[in-house]
Image (cartoon, rainbow, N blue to C red):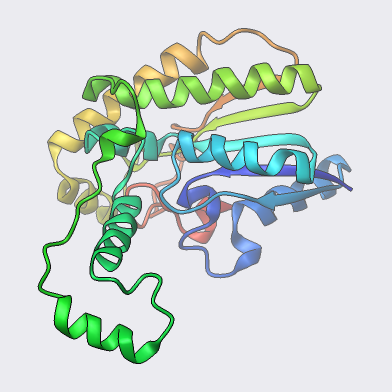
Length: 254
C-alpha cells in the first residue's frame, strides 16, 4: 500500500470520536478502499492544538521516512485561534512545558539523577522565582493580530504545494467545518454559540471567510493540488452535529 498523510489539529486527530473506527483517518481509508478501490495506509499525523506551522513541521520530519503519495489537510480553526489570542509561532501548550522546564532547571532538578536530592532541592529551592520563556525567540517578525491566521495558513500551502508538485504527490486541502457557519443549528448548538460570544464569533467568521476567498476560491489551478471548502457541509442537518465549536459527533465525523 502507498502511504497517505492526514494532517491537522484535534478535529483531524479525531477528538470526541467514540472509538478509532469513527475518526477521520479510519473513515478516509475505508472510503478510499471501498468506494474508489484505492488502497492507502492513511497515517494520522494530526495532533491536538496543531496549526499550520506544526502541520508543516510534522510533514517535513516524516516525509522521507514514510514517503507518502497523498497528503490530506483538514485544518483552519487553530490558525484562527492563534490569531485571536495574538499567538504566532508559540502556543500555550509549548510555553507551559518550556516554563516548567526552565523552573526545574533553575532549581537544579532537571539533570539531577538522585531521587532524594531531587526531593531536597524541591523543598529547599522551590521558592526561587520561575523563569519565563520569551516567545519572541520563536520568530523574527510577528504579523499584526488580524494577519496571523492567513500568514500561517498561506505559508503552509505555498510550501506544501510547491514541494509536492515537484514530487508528483497529490495534496488535498480541506477547510474544516465550524459551528458558526452551520445554518440550521440545534438548540444545544445555539446555546454553545451564545456561550462563545460575539467578539470571538466575529473574528472567527471574518478570518475563515478571508482564507476561503484568498486561498480556496482564488488558488492556482494545479493538477496535483486541490482545495475543498467544508464550512457549509452541515447546512442540511438540523440536529446537533457539533458538541463544541469545532468538534463533532460520530455522525459529523462520518
